Image (tube, rainbow, N blue to C red; front, side, top):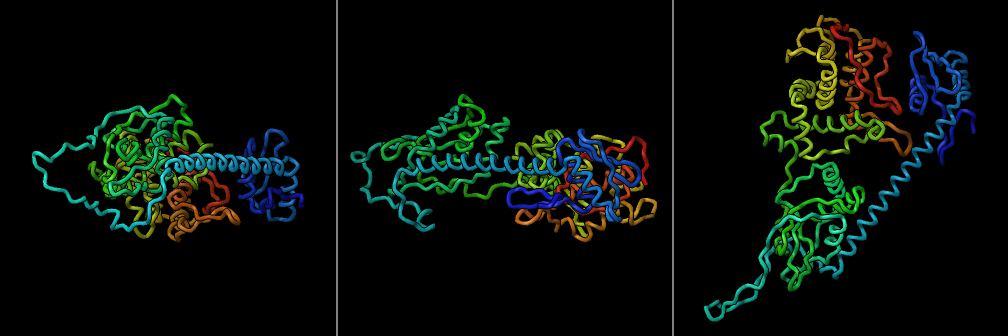
Length: 476
């Protein structure tokens, strides 16, 4: 193995030959720092070995081999390998936890299937009401009172153990003798419910748990609410055996009514915002989703470090409502961002809105109240003006301008075809998160006067906070 490579499992990794990738590697290592060291160099230190300075141009003569050897003496290969092995170990632990949780949920599902599987039926048969047996007309002498108990609803505190007991009951029996078959568990929905319960956002409403009668042919099996019960069971593993969720439980529910449960189309978050009288609801919904995960990253950068996975997080409608109540002025940022969604830029409006909102929360003086971004000269207004028009408010434009370089990058559609990773791990980056990443990166270059021309997403590039210009600054 080469002295400039790291062996991790079956993969052999080489020290990067590109200066930006090499600097990013050093930044990603625990305890390592990279700062500007002069006008054309970078100072790299790890707090152990003496620091070194790396030139912006590593292609001249012996500059690249010398930089590699200096970093190797500092211990870059050892720290890199330790970091990669730690990441692999963390992924294996997470996979083990996921397998264990799936095995437990599968075991519960198996316990529920205590009766033999029913014969296959068509959709028409499933939704067709059972044909009642012929009966003689009821008279005063022959009519009898129904023995079927009346359904009733009452709140109950459901613990994890109680949820498991309900989930392991036999499946209810329909009036025609068939066994009720529940829909397949949606693990994503279970996880979202669990998160709402753990964070105290779950609300007790009329929608709860429905249980079949316990006599004559049923044993109180679950006919509705299995996802809520799975979420309670899953959350109790974190919260402890005494933790519970108060939920309305309807007993003596008719199993035949299952065919009409939740058959309507679920309302989207945008539709819920529209019902609430909001405008630009699709863009507002997307911005609130991105703002939610952005806030989580600001609070805990390590836990949310992988911005490539941010698009997998989906806040509940209640969390969206709370976000909007706590951040009401984001509506104005959403309105401003709408101009960048259409041709020719087609930038993510949510990324523009969250970027603009965060910066002006930290530095209100960077924007004006002028809704059309006219020639205010304030930093954020000027940056977005150049991004939108391709020239400054003074009518001038230069290809080295970070905002204009970013505009050209968006015009080429690069944010929609950005791939990261290598080999089997190579994947398409989410466009909204890429747009936010590059908006902040180019804004920071503009604020600090960085003249580097790189725009594309580099390997292992990390999300960073936007820099705040000094008050009364006029950037050009």
